[in-house]
Image (cartoon, rainbow, N blue to C red; front, side, top):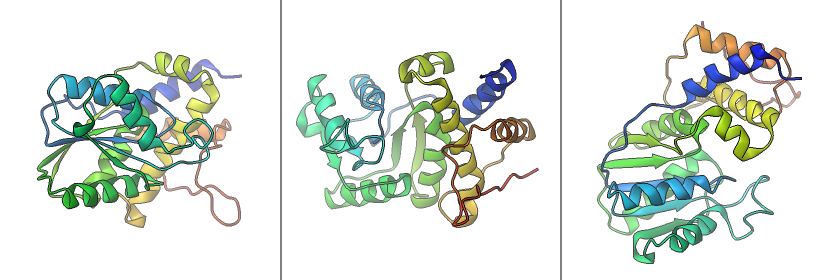
Amino acid sequence: MITTQDWADTRRLWDYHQMGHEPRACSVGIGLGSHDLGVADTAVHLYRRGMVPLLVFTGATGPTTRERMPRGEAVHYRGRALELGVPSSAVLVEPHARNTGENIRFSRELLEEAGVGVSSVLLISKPYEERRAYATARKLWPEVEIVSASSPMTLDEYVGSIGDARLVIDMLVGALQRLLVYPEQGFMISQEVPDIVIGAYERLCQRGFTSRLLRNEQGHAFSQARR
């Protein structure tokens, strides 16, 4: 059973994962592939608002998308964008990335090969992946300005869209763990994580919301809580 305290802790993580950036005009929009077609919808919305002249969709397939998006996440995102009226000339596809780091590196290489000058990136992800995407891009592409964006949804709305509250909590917990662990592994920049967020994360781990945690060879979850 998910308790009132569990929900309070989950909201702490949800709020922290979002960067709170105000979308603004950028050189390009990059939509990070996932199971969530809402990323493509948000990218199209921002394109229509004139925020970007070009969209890049990046992503191969993974365990959660192999059946739903057999042609690859980026390819399905592109199809969605074209259905919604974006011209094909305004969409590039990067179909090989299998993690956030590859999303950034491969998209950068694609844009360089296409001769597209980039000084700023509107980085579009799932709501709870905003901070992870931002931290990864700042590490791997430090010379450009990164603006994070996602579908403007509340936690309750997102849980309703996924249809599995426990899975959503697990995903938020896993995303927070990566923010704690990955900087020391060189995958992203380090960011301050407030004690109140660490406390919420630790309580949710103790409550068993751990299916998305990274684990070592012995099956134990990596822990890097900083206080």
